[in-house]
Length: 289
Image 1 (tube, rainbow, N blue to C red):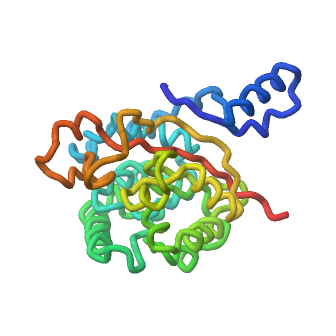
Image 2 (tube, one colour; image 1 turned 30 degrees about the vertical axis):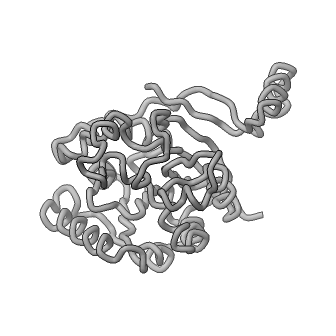
């Protein structure tokens, strides 16, 4: 599996002269992390649902960019966990995999889109997810519904193993409620529980506010924001890196697939670029001091 995980160098301090030389080399490059071994292979059950007939063909087209098996393996997903997916989206992209995978031994909580951000999109998401549950109770009948913001009102404190959010954080930062939302993630996670975050990576040579309007986030700022809420960055991965994404598109990140907001304008160029360049970060909830 072609997954590159970048672990925090703090965990490797004091392991002999070779580690010290490596640490000095990385510090000299101003890089706080180094390349480590890949995650263990994902289990056969997860592969079954990634390949399963329950997935739409439209969603399958995104697999080469999003790499569901590798991404969920990187976040440490196991079939006996309690997992929250925040804002499953109208496409139900991860929902189609996570809900049936966790159906028998685990617990899947869909934290639906609440709050003031894009009410039309929220309503559409609610209808799609609830419609899937009603139409296919054998697959989705055990799904638990909650809301975000407001996750801590519907999910017990310290009861969740894994919280996942895919391309949502830029919305909360834009809305000004990101800190509150992340605190709710912290509240529902068990000590040592994992927060998995994927979002569009901003350029470093342009103002952060300008990039945010285009849908992109500074990775270093995201790490600082989440660690401030009581998490520690445990690992980062290049699973969703895309160096073809120049991040200077006329309609921001939404110029790219799957949105293709400009429709036929430069369509072939945007299709050739593919989905956005994304960071993939795994945080762990720190135990109380």
